[in-house]
Image (tube, rainbow over all chains, first blue to last red; front, side, top):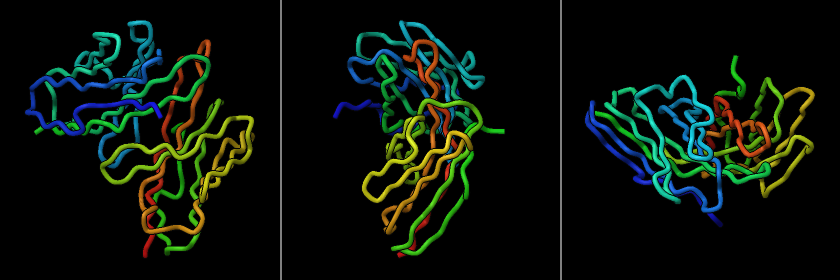
Length: 113
Length: 115
């Protein structure tokens, strides 16, 4: 079964550093998303991406965050100048056209120290 | 108030018993999904129920959906210790032409199954 792949599974970074979380969506999918889950809390929407541009973003997704689809397969989330409160699990998701189900990756656990 | 709220927040049962978790939401949806998450791990997709469906089964899982009450329930029958996890509902609304989906997760129910 096709799956969304995220790397790394766990990343530890120093406060103030930049991190890039990587996702490989399912190959024929066109809509891409990032979600965040702070430990013990619910999963929150960050941003959606289609046709090489952001289609919607939440209040959480401020100037510290950016997304990119640098090539035909990867979808990345960059967090600049990380803060302790950025520590969370980050999930990538993708879906194709015509109301098909969105698939979620297994997440990247980001720990900012 | 939130789109997806689940109750109970926590549930502790004995192995072999049934576990029922409820999810309420506020806006229209196209489908509703349930996920399981073991502590600190990723989301495992359990079951999807479409807005025109009322009940769906998958193994020991039974999901119901009542769009008039804007609620769903997940029943796990004959629970096992391995079912211990957090369970989240997620409502899905198709936007525009139906490609972009707005997925909103609930607050989750933490289930503990005692051996």
